[in-house]
Structure formats: C-alpha cells, structure tokens
Length: 156
Length: 293
Image 1: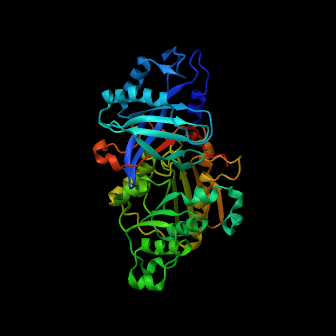
Image 2 (image 1 turned 120 degrees about the horizontal axis):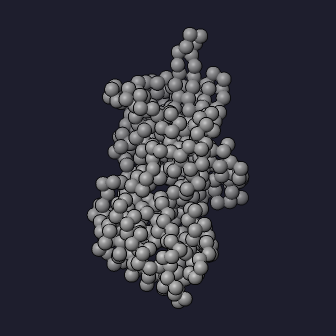
Image 3 (image 1 turned 120 degrees about the vertical axis):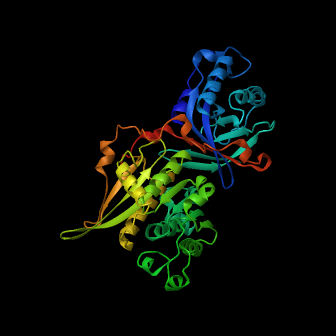
C-alpha cells in the first residue's frame, strides 16, 4: 500500500494524477468472491498521454503491459487511482466512462477472469468488479489490508 | 463510556467496532484452541469459524476450557463446547462450528481475517500456512510439548506469527522437510503430545495478544512481522526467538510469485453473479519486515 500510494501521489510531467494496476487472484469464501491483490504495477511515465480534459490518460502501451501481466500470470487486473480526501471515494463520471472503455480489454488476455477498478482515498477504498460477459459491475463490499497492521472494513 | 470501552480504552475509540467485525478461524479446539476461543470472545470478537473433528473425552478434561464431566459422558463435539463457551460470554457472537477436518471448511476459513492453528502435526501446520498465504490471511500457530530428559521433563512450546509477504514457518526452520517426511511416513499421525492447561494458556494468551496487536496496535514503536516466540515452561519464560533477528534481512523464498494467490482451480462460473458479494484483500508490502519487538 505504501509503495502504491507513493507512486500514485508522485507528480508527473504533464498528467495531473497517476494510475496503476493491481494483479489479483480469486477464490470463493462462504459469503462471496474473494479478490486477492498482491502486486502493484505502476504505469510508466512515458505511457501517459497529454489530455488536459482528464486527470490522467494512459495510452495503449499501458494497456498492453497490463494485458501481458494478466496473460503471463493468470491473474485479473484491477485499475487503481486516488482521490485525495478521507472516507469512501466515489468514482467520477469520467471514471465510469473510461472504465467502460478499457476494462473489457482485459478479457482479451484473460476472458475467464473478473477484472475491475479501485479508487483509493487517503483512508478508504472503493471498487467494482466486472464478471466475464457482464455489462454491469458488482460493487466490492468488503476490504482487508494485510500487513503489519491488519485493517478491514465494509463498504458504505 | 460503557464498561467495555472503559476496560479496553487504550485500544482506541474504534476498538469495539473493529473487534466486533473481526472474523477469526480456530483450527483445533482442544487445550490451546479452547483458550483462544474464550479470550477472543471476552475481548469482543463476534465472528468465529471453529474446526475440529473430535469429540470430548476423559483424556481432554485436564486442559480443555469449558469442558465438563457431562461433556465426557455425552461425547460432546469439541466445537460445540467452544461454541457454547463463546455464546455464554457473548450471545451475539456468530459461530460456524464445523465438526470435520478443517479441509472441509475451506470457504469459511478463506474469509477469515486471521487463523489460529492449534493442531498437533507439522503436516497440518504446513497445510494451514499454505492456505493462509494463498488467501492472504495472517496465521498464528501455537504448540507445546513435554520432553523427557535425564533429570526429569522439559515443558516447551512456541507461538509463530506468519504474515503473508513476510517470513514463513519454513524460513524459521520450524517446518522442516525431514519432520514433514517423517509424519508422512506415519500417515500424518503426530502422536498424542502431552498437553497441560497452564502452558496452553500462556501460548494462547500470546497468540491472542499478537492478533489484537495486529488489528489495534497500541504502541507505535512495535511493528509486527512474522515471528517465533519460544516458550520455556521450566523457567516460565516466553522470548522472541533468536531466529527472528538472525533472519531480519532474509526474504521468504517459499511463498512468492504472482501466481501464488487465490484458488488455482477457481473460475468465474463458480459464482452466481447476480447474488455475489465481492471482497478485496490487498497485501501491504511492509509486511516483509520481521518483528521489531
């Protein structure tokens, strides 16, 4: 989390914010799907495109890198970016529009797995998961951060 | 301020909520696990998965918290005794009591925030740690033994905290190929290790303390990582094993790689999408540090 936050809040030459990807495994618990994120993959500096209309726009090279991770490792890919406030973050209209465009790309590499998007705030997280063949994402209901401090909470 | 908050106020204003929402798995509800269940119920944890295939017998009566002579006569399941104990302490607690091997309760255990392993065999410890790593669950293992020596007996034991992303029980040389191989040759039978109530109480208390420290750290200078605590029951001491500092710069090589998390046989068809709940677990890379206690 610290490395991820450190990268996401790092200034970029022209992009107003940074984004990245988390590779995830999956499993089923007694009350639903478990999405298990371990590795954070930052978008390379040169993969950001100039677009003053949005906080960050990444190009096809960034998507290709994420697809390669999914393909090589058999993992789902979750896009992540930050909103700088406390509490549960809500995606903007631009977030929803962009997710709808690029999340389906991940099924080219791993059609059998869910993929999705996460938004981080300074103390919470929200997320949505797209199942294969489903247009509407499922809101992620519970979060656990596993580390020297174990943190867990339920989405509002 | 309620009595509960007053008693545990040093854990912070949100401690009651955090404890109440905690989901813990306890595997083995004998001498060690029964203590763990009792203490977790007292501090306010409200969601339990209890796994033990055994029924209560006379031989368990010297060490199992909550067991009665009536349970000996009735051959009550150990998980039912623990469930009753938890319910008497906190009637609101939700308990999934599984009177089977824990391998039959995987969906319940995968959703836990921490798993306490209170089992006899190295093989089961190995399997429990593998499950915990795969599903990013902190694993806390306790065990004791009594060894005969020339001058009498040595009571000893250990508590191991195994955090995903940090050193594992293989790194600490607690699980070794020769021990696992020996058990495998004996079809997984660890044999009945001598158990007594007071060392189990100390080991269980340390394990519960580690869990509370993980979710409600009460001192900023203490940063938990994977660790082994050695118990000397003859001198009545519990110390951080010298193995921990000796391995402070070592990175676990037994559990690593992108493909390691989750169920390798899972596919999206296993879940009925319209009703599914999704939960996310993310590994905090700082877990790679070992304990600084």
